[in-house]
Length: 119
Length: 106
Image 1 (cartoon, rainbow over the protein chains, first blue to last red):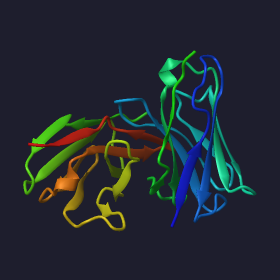
Image 2 (cartoon, rainbow over the protein chains, first blue to last red):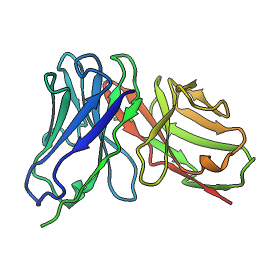
Image 3 (tube, helix red, strand yellow):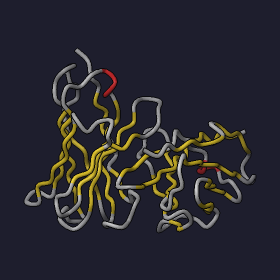
């Protein structure tokens, strides 16, 4: 059974960097594709980024200047960094699996972690 | 960047009724998925590649459409089907989601 678990800070201050970790079990980060999606409170889903097993990354153009995604195969984890955060970045952040290079959807999701941006 | 719109924004129906949810894309897309989300939970994949049911999804859920217009149909609503439904597309390497349709019990 594939499971994903997000972890990160409970609170981030404005202008700081948001850093999240997704720990994967039941699948290898080196064999699939992995993404981050967020959901501001009471709003819809927004795709942030994904990374292929070969390391290629793709970012949402609206966030591209501030976001990076990476993978650590030794830990079976992948990561999100979002710089210069503002209150508009307050959201539940989900990590998810895209099963394969030609599977254009997310089949397994983490439970999500709420990251408030506030001083 | 392709924009998805969903209609209606909310829908009130009774158990046993048929639900038809719409998703419209600003340009033609070839890959469309639908997700169900309940309060406090992650989205759950229902339909992918327009009409393929994800493993474990009941047969009352079906997807269809082509080009820019797509539908999710729930043939006979069960109490556990009342939730928010999101459509999602991928084109030219980029993903986008629709704003969601809230399906409420009448």
